Image 1 (spheres, rainbow, N blue to C red):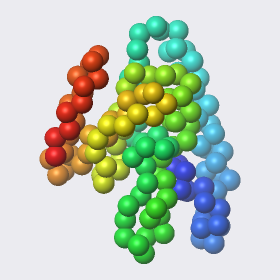
Image 2: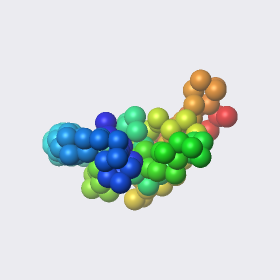
Image 3: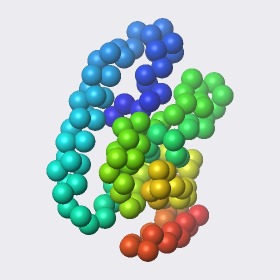
Image 4: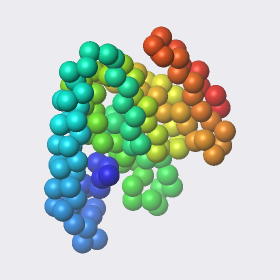
Length: 136
């Protein structure tokens, strides 16, 4: 998966990073996801999306050492946010970003990052009421 920060042409062209190849793969994965979701859309039951990476715009800003060139950039995936906006799932579970834990709304959808399990963090989501208990 290619996070949005990888498409920073100014930063990665200097490192001879092959953005165009990554972008083509990114578009192909997006098209595949939307094709699958279009087929699932026929089911009228509420949906739960589970993504490893966070959607762009929530739990996605990299907080690392100041000498890390990725510090302050997004590790979110824009087409996950597009899918949330288009398909309106009831709940999105995501992770990857160990520095985050909690629940936030994105386009009216509840997004939960359970936190860093190695540090004993997790979240309990009661479904379908969507009550969230975050354990730190």
